[in-house]
Length: 322
Ligand SMILES: [Cu+2]
Image (tube, rainbow, N blue to C red; front, side, top):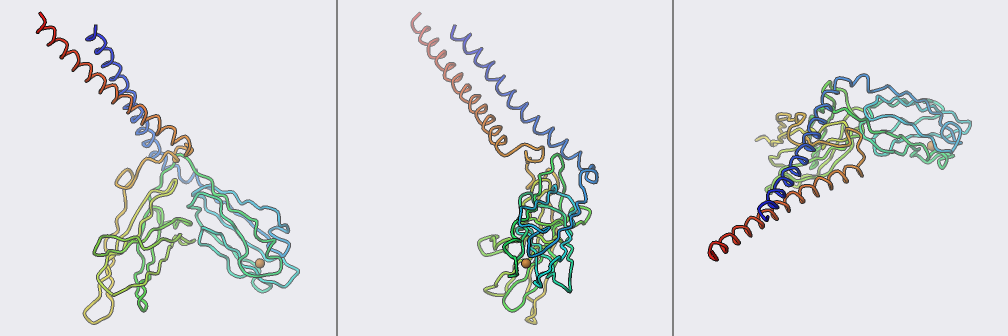
């Protein structure tokens, strides 16, 4: 009887295990289909063009909320046009996107910004210089929606390494594989130390895909500099490394080392459920279900092993008894 129960439990455990592995396969095939859809890029991305009037009354003549909605990967063009009866200058900035217009006033009546919307989220668009009606120019938003079902490889390069005074000026650039710059992406910067690579800070890419970082140097020394983009939504991670080498003559020789990128599916690329339009809450539920299933399977195994041991003990007791 105990043997029969043990057999049933063992079969149940096997079923549990195959359920978990088929879930893993489902994830795997999903990520495959994500990669195949990369060729649809041009159909998926749109060019979004906006014209916004700027006056002391607000954006488009009102202090009401103005939403500019785009999707991640879209080519965005916004033209801000000076439309004021009051003689006051404006300069418009998109927070979190490292983008600002030139100053617009009576002489320079328009400023056009163009960029690829790389970062998903809601970003404040507002006037950043003191002006007449500044309070009316604080309520416009760039809303970048998540694009689903696409994965795009990135190229990260270190453009320049200059030392001015005791400051190291790092310039990194993030583009897609075709070389188009991507805006709004967070790039992390690292330098080598005696204790390994150290994070020195981060910055966001501008309309040219460029993220800059100035690092005060304690001493001019040989050092490895790294720029790392961890990936964001449809954009896959990438990194670049450069070597900073002081020369004998006291001037700074900069050798830009090989650029490395994480290939799709390679190191640093982890299946991202956001790619197939799964919300973070659902991801957490899925992850919890998998953990619970795995725990169930392993606890069943443990139970079976304990039963088998019990059977052995009882049968040896029986033998002794007979
Ligand atoms: Cu203003």
